[in-house]
Image (tube, rainbow, N blue to C red; front, side):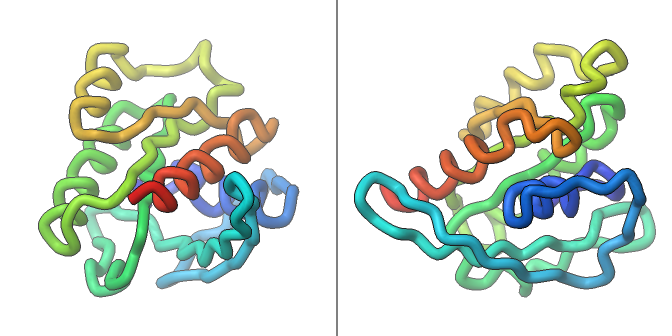
Length: 157
């Protein structure tokens, strides 16, 4: 989950299908994908819900989250406001379904020289109980580890 155009769909496509497209596609509603991952000696089927972006005109329906075992919140390192959206979504999810294992993927690390995120803001989100991983859907950097870490956290929970 995250703000509009942070790379949610690109991260899912990179993870599930090992592909990246420069073309921007707006997600309407929700798109569901599935991938099996081995966590320790256990095969885990991840059902991944790619939800539309949160913006001034559209908000994520908390009803989509019933039964969720974990969440990846995505922020765009080049847009500070997307970090605020991720934090707000985290609070709304906690209020709706309780605390679930969570990862904050700060995406677009291939553009790190253009990042606007103050390190202290990122550190504050660790206090929310989220693991923070810098990702790039474009290069694939840390995409697999982000999803694997979430799967491992869900198995522990």
